[in-house]
View 1 (cartoon, rainbow, N blue to C red):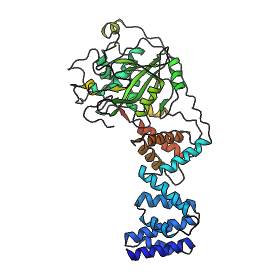
View 2: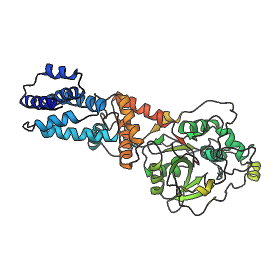
View 3: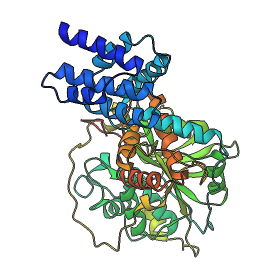
View 4: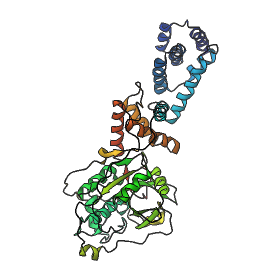
Length: 452
């Protein structure tokens, strides 16, 4: 090792003076000694950097840190190259790359982040104006419990812990006049069959459920960004929203993805939310909804706007008699908005039961309608020419999966910037991320494993 160190010192002096032979350095790269290979690679990087070849510097640094993850050789060379006027530049770049490695193992998160911030600073920061379609017609919409739906028994209703999406869409079905011949339990079963799994229901699965009841989207599905004005605009126009958000277990501290229905705005400006897990209505502030959305997995949940029926649905005496007002008592009180506790599902059957498939009239992929709050065309480019769409996709997904909320926020920013970018590579990454997020599930409250 002492001989290798002396060789590194000699190389560093030659590199700093500009006299290093690239042929020699490339020969070292092929050495049988791992340390000498690292020294050769590091010296090449340093040579390129000191010459000011920024493109080569980024390419070589990305290869070195991405594939080898060993900074010993470069650190040794930097220690011997103190006479170089560009040494500080290399040190700063090294620090940035090391920080990137601490965040994830794919593309340069910080390179992407820096590009997105640069583009954002020179662009308009206003939100996109989402299209709000004609509201349509609704009849009274009950709260339907996913745990104890009306008409449900131990024999005819299973998977209550998994059925938050089915119960949420069932509420909308009642409001649209669909399924009057079915009890709440039968309606949830029909919606969930072949769609809901042991992990709950994905966003695209919700799209299939909405397709089964003939529901219409009232605009784009908001994933990774929305404005309070847009939510208010939908509700003021008599549209409803399915929200995938995070619900917090006060006993375990865990967070599960969950579906609720945002029904209307009250006179105090609160959102009235129908929660199928708690079986009751909640009055929540815009900030409470946003905080719960931020807790959801992936890009931070989703808001799915639903338009009313094109023709006023007839009131059904059968539904009124059998379903009633649909307001159940909360299993545990009091709990704050978007909170749950172990007692809520205590003693429930946590086994997932396969349901017989239903005749399908076609699937609706919500991910085809995803959008964010970012202005279209506001970013020229997010990923550099040296980062592929695949690497960008993985980088953003890795950020989404971080426990550190500040890193998840970086991921959301990049996600928004990708949609607004004019780069074909960025658009390819955006489309792949949308497909992935369309598969993210929501369940309400898991019992055995609370990980998504």
